[in-house]
Length: 244
Image (cartoon, rainbow, N blue to C red; front, side):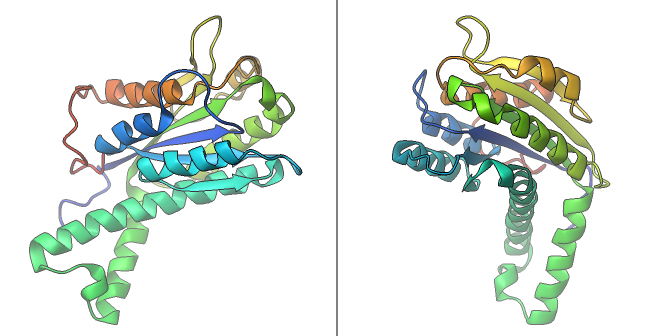
C-alpha cells in the first residue's frame, strides 16, 4: 500500500443547520456534485427540545446520503461532541474504502475477506493513516433567522472541532462559510483556509438573518476546495488517489 501515505488529503464539508433549505438550488443535488468530486458532505441538524421539522430532518439525511457522509440530529448541547465524532468517523470510512480499493487491485479481496490477524493489521494501518493524512475541511454554518438562539454554541462547537483536529500529526486546513450572506448574497466567507479557526472572525461574522440557502452553501464550499487545489471545476471523474 505504498500509495497510501501521509501526503494524501481527505476533503470534507460539514453543514450545520436547523432547518429546511428554502433558497437556491436543491442541496441534495449540490451534495451529489460534491461527492462526485470526492468531497464528503456531513450534516448536523441542530434542534431544541420540542422543535419539529420533518422536512428538515428528511433533507438533512438526504444531503448526507448524496454526499457520502453522515447525518446526526442533535440538541445544541451535543453539537460539539457530534461534530468531532462525525469528522473522525468519516475520515476512517474514507480511508477504509481506499484501503479496500488497494487490496482489491493487489489481492482481489477486501479487508473483510482476510483472516482475523490480517484484518487487525489493516485496522491499525487505517488508524495510523487517520492521524497522518492531511484534512481539508469547510464548515458551512446556517445563519438563518431561526439560528439566533444557537449562535454561541455553534461558534464554540466550530472552535472545539478545530482544536480537536489539531492534535493530529496530519496537516489541517479549515475554512468557514455562513449562509445566507450579506445583502442578496446566499453565502459569506467567514474565514479562508487556515490551520486553525479564527475565533474573532466567528464573533463578528455569525449574524443570523433571512432564509436557508443550503444548496448554494455546499456549492460554495466545493468551489473553495477545488480552488485551493487549483482543480478544474468541471472534473467529475470521482475520487482521486489523494482521497479527494
